[in-house]
Length: 228
Image 1 (cartoon, rainbow, N blue to C red):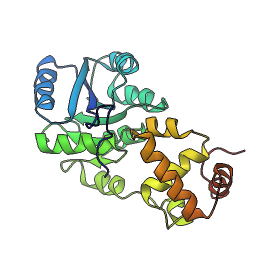
Image 2: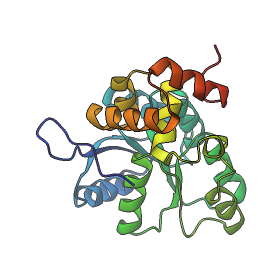
Image 3: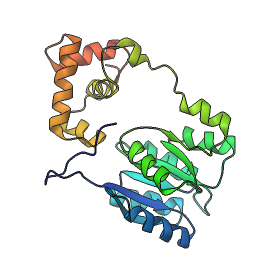
Image 4: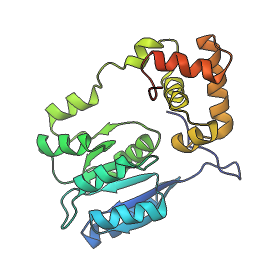
């Protein structure tokens, strides 16, 4: 996992977190815990799913800590709405519910991770940073069958088509194939534009192509990106 992208000052940019939970005391405690974590910044709080969607649009957090069982719009529906946005925040479910059906529903809705509320600070800290970088986290206390099923991702066609590329390089190639510019890719992946340019150059070299259009054609032939 790469480090946090640097801001204009050259210092790492904090991971911006929106807290969503219908219990004020839990939100208060979680906010206090996040403030003790270096490089993590709580930027807002919501008491239900509808407010979470509204605040996410206003505040543009990197990660949303999402309770699932809330009045009105619940966490599953809010997660589905947030994850349909492109670009959108990573959603990390933080809940008391550990039934297989609920875990699966949250992950199918697009959540990048699932933790139980008895997770300690260190586990929450690691999970936030991991999903902010595009990773997937399923907590230690989550129902065993679902955890095993979701912790072991299916074979990646891009990995098989481009075995010489790293995971990050395949991710960058996929976004190039979607037609994104380097600047747009940098925003999507929370990287500096210089880092993206370097990744693109390495990808071109490994693919043996000299132009972006040739890279796009190669990627789309392998099933990446949008169809022509």
